[in-house]
Length: 324
Image 1 (cartoon, rainbow, N blue to C red):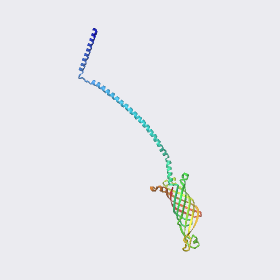
Image 2 (cartoon, rainbow, N blue to C red; image 1 turned 90 degrees about the vertical axis):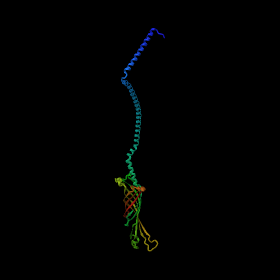
Image 3 (cartoon, helix red, strand yellow; image 1 turned 90 degrees about the horizontal axis):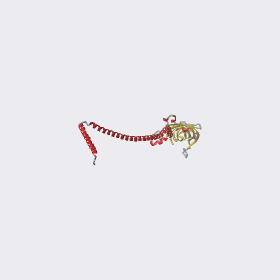
Image 4 (spheres, rainbow, N blue to C red; image 1 turned 180 degrees about the vertical axis):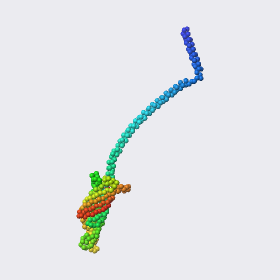
C-alpha cells in the first residue's frame, strides 16, 4: 500500500510515541521491581489472605444455611410426628376413658353387688329345703318312765326377709317320731287287776306326728355377724300322739300263744312348742367333703308336748340337718 507524504508522517510519529511509552513503562516497572526487592511482602499477603478468609466465611455461611435448611426440614418432620403422637395420645385417652367407665359403674354398683353376694352366701348357709334326723331322750305320758326318741323331719322355707319377715325366715316342718324303750313293772293291766297275777312288765310306745311352723332368727341381721353360724329358732304347732301300752296275756302253762302280749292304743290330739338351734358346718374347710359340709348342720332341740287329755311331757334331742 502506498501512502501520501502527510499520512506517512503521522504513522511514523504514532509508532515513535508508542515505542516511547512502552519503553518508559518497561523502565518504570524495572525500577519499581528493583526498589521493592527485599521489602516486606506482608501487605500483599494480607490482601490475598483476606480474600481467602472471606471465601471461607462465605462457604461456612452457605454450609450453615444448608444445615439450617436441613434442621428446618427435620423440625417439620418432628412437628408432624408430635402432632401424630398427640392425636394418638388423645385417642388412647378416649379409649382409656371408655374402658374405665365399666369400672366406675362397677364401683358404683359394688355395694349392691356385695349385698347380693352376702345374701347368696346367707341363702347357701340356710338352704330352703332340708331333711333332718332327731334322737335323744323323752318323757312319756301317763306317768310311764321316759325312753329313747327317734324321729325324722322334712323342712321347707316358706317366707324370708324379702317377704317382710323381720330378721329371719319362717319354715314349715313335718316331724314324725316315736318314744320307746321305756317299761315298768305295774299292776296297770287287766290280769293284775283281776288278781290272776301280780305286777307284770309293761311298756309304752308313743308315736308323734307334729306339723309345725318355725321362725329362724338371722343373727347377722341383728348385728351379730361373728356368730351368725348359729341358727336359733322357735317352733309351735299342732300334734297327734298315738300311745301303745303293751301287757302280757296270761296263759297257764307252756301252751301255744304263751308269752303273747296285748297292746292297747290311745290316740290324742294336742299342741307342741319348743326351741332349738343349729350350727352350720360350712365354715369347716375340708376339700374332699366340702360340698357335704356346706349343706350340713348340727343342732339341739327341746319340745313340750301337750295332749288334749291333759297329759304333758318333754323331749330333748340332738339333730343332724342336711339341706338341698
